[in-house]
Image 1 (cartoon, helix red, strand yellow):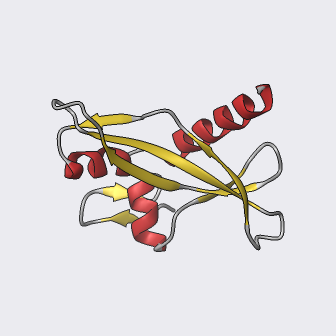
Image 2 (cartoon, helix red, strand yellow):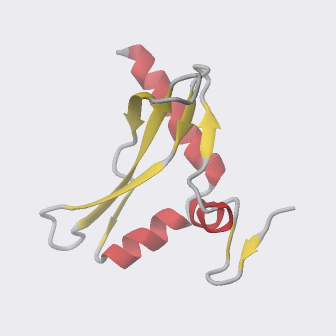
Length: 112
């Protein structure tokens, strides 16, 4: 049963809800057999209409869990006018969509 985050209506099937409920970022096992965690990156850009960009970084952990061996990164997922809007947008992203983004990154990494 999914726990709901009453403060903002997010449940733990979203990035924001999961982080709120579990007090840690979500982790996934990639199709390459490595464990990954999710890191949200919000940066400023020179775009005056939407100066905040959001993307995810997936640190790839050693199979022992004792160190990061690399990482994958998504393209820009959101462009927003304020940092708050950027945080809200990424917090509503479903974990199932994040897993798909991870798998796309793994496939792309193997194509290189």
